[in-house]
Length: 465
Image 1: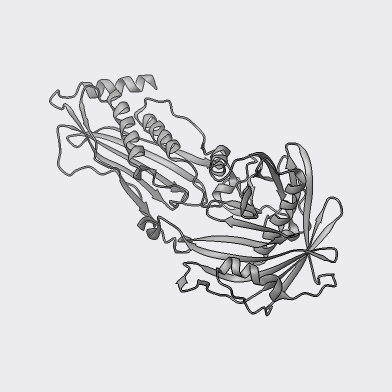
Image 2: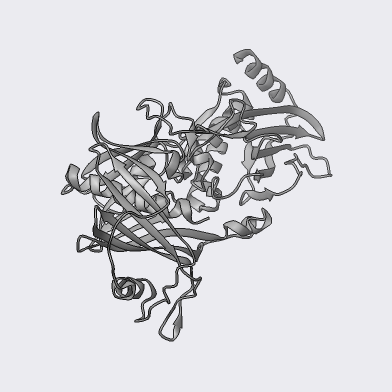
């Protein structure tokens, strides 16, 4: 490798001395068949763009020494939606100066789900190619969950570091590395949660099976190596309790919390579903969901820019006693900062953010769980105070599945990871594992109750369809 660098340098140094300048005529980064949600355009940040350009100005003189180098004012950026491909482009006119083309492209493989980062460099003088080289690396997110989400695969500074590493590889300055480049870390998730609340304790929700398909899933709540509780769910044909209640009296206040006005939906159940939640102590709780009509919510004269889809009322019973009532809803909110590049990629279905929430009371305590699908977080609040956050990014490197699906070894197909019949068994070393962060005041018993709230949310989400 060192010998090739010397030869390239000697070749360039022996060219006519009249060519004293270097003009970078193409500086381009593109995306193809991937989204800006997973790969944001970090070069749009002047600080990141300037840092990358400075790195280029440090590396390029090692191949073209003692010459003035001129870069374009900004990167050219493209999102390729169809079968286009990034191409090296030079001016049609010849020049005695050195002309350099630098292209970078993140693209999904033509077949399958593998994602590659390709970089190409060409150096010309008087239309004669003096150097041409291309490097390519597969990109691998640190968690399999990220492949199936809108979560960014890397942050801005990681993008900068990888870009400059590959640029150095292209020039032959750095020895080429083999194998995929692993992106991101669980610390990025933790830092995001720490911006929302002060983390006091950390638990793990271990899942065997598809998280939102309760009838074939098992859940294990752990603190370090200690098993706190285990949950499972079974659908039932009828709710086995003898209890009469006034639905309007129970749910009116909850509807007011959601809508902002003192109103109430006509409670005529279009359909209902029931289920039972079991834990390792042999206790069980029963749940009932009732579907209501679709509504648009307004606050007095002001229209709320969101849509509450198919509100669902829920009841939870311990033996014959009602211990919780709640309302589940899915809200559609417009995503901020949508660019024309998203539209070019035909991401119309992703222009809105889906938020699933349950709002209710548990033994006289107000609670709220909100699943923000875009950033894969579930926020848990008691009495309007954020007390816990569950990340739905699987942090177990031994588990290649997420939500009951996984990629084949060659990343060509997406296949189920759950058993066709019966429940999947929990294996602490290979099952999906999701970090649950709480405030310091929470104890194990309180976290066990959180487990029930989470299953209420999963039960509702799993039945929305």
